[in-house]
Amino acid sequence: MKEIGSYLRKTRVDNGVSLDEAAGDLSISKEDLENLEEGNIRAFKDVYILKDLVKNYSKYLGLNPDKVLDEFNDFMFEHTSKISLDEIKAARKQSDEDKPKVISPYSYTPKKKFSIKDINWKKILIPVGIIILILIIFSLFRYFNRDSEEITEELMGRISDYSEYTY
Image (cartoon, rainbow, N blue to C red):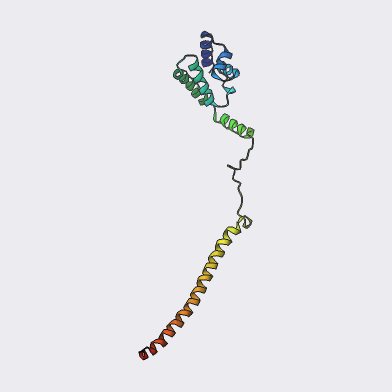
């Protein structure tokens, strides 16, 4: 990365652009440009931000950004392929410890055991009560309607007995 940074610094100096001027034109901090030109990749927390910076800075300096990015990608591949698995695990463990423990109500779901206290009884008892009430009303309706049908049949039978006497 130092070679890429040196190349970018040399190109900037050859173009007669100061570090302050380049930082102002690119709307980035002077320290980020200094770290880039020195090849200090550890100053950047995200590789993608560093990659965008390399691309934009190389465009700004009039270089072919694709060639510079190819060099950057080759460096990153070579650099990351030399990192041992133990170093990666240690870095991940350290980053997990360094992270603040923020609990968002939108993403956090607590792990709870099921409890009877957790049941919303209103949501269960109201529909069950309505169903029972409907069944009672239906049963009463059938009961009273059945009696009237029997009476009607009985009356119809008596009326038919007298129908032969009609004039």
